[in-house]
Length: 350
Ligand SMILES: *Cc1c(COP(=O)(O)O)cnc(C)c1O
Image (tube, rainbow, N blue to C red):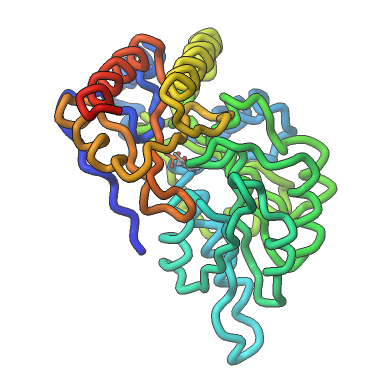
């Protein structure tokens, strides 16, 4: 399966990608405008910005590798998995494990390196399938993609599970995708990464920081582990615009704090809407909420799109029959979307 970005409508309210609906900090745009002709002509030096990201994430020098969006980080661990598996002739393809429902990119990156995707279904109500995942481990397992909090459910992984998995699979890398950690306030970054050196945490500045178009992400892990991944990256993987944007965004912490506060209020508005309409929903630690509209889901998503409001139809995802995912951005946007949804449901007599 390859990743097909959903169709976009010009000028629409985009609540289908979990982007920052307020845009990036104004300081970012100012920093982009300040790039000089000479700077644009030189290959970038990543050392200063890498140090700043390391400080922001509370890790020592050498523990961060910047990537061209987190997607590049997801790609490079898949390449590692492929290479790490090459040894015994005829060993077949390496296994890459995901837990369902998962971010679509893992599937695509696994295919890109010709590895075998092993899907572990969730428990009831999307409970994290620790036992199922442990049972799926084999000597061929080289990579496990975990998402905390998960996309599309918004559910966090129970504490301790990640370490249990990493210990049980020393032959594999565990990529902890923390794309939404700025919203959850939880992270695996800390002493765990020193204890269990096969865990690499992935972060992105696309979501809370609003830099999706500029492409800036980071891998965080023990320097020895990162060295094995650095070899697989091109030397100039971020452009200067991403570097400057990242520095300016990190400097404007107040902006991110404000935005995270907006998303928390928005989530509550969406839960309230779901309660009033008796729609099952899941408590989210991210900037989005998954809820179940039932068989009408696709028609409702289309009706919203006709009004210029885009949300994500997740009906086709495993265990997500009839579900949609709506980004919880700034409160004004959430209210606008919920008002339109209210009208659509009323007109359909539900
Ligand atoms: C958005 C998202 C990413 C991609 O981040 P980029 O930095 O834009 O590449 C990775 N993982 C998950 C779970 C996401 O939702």
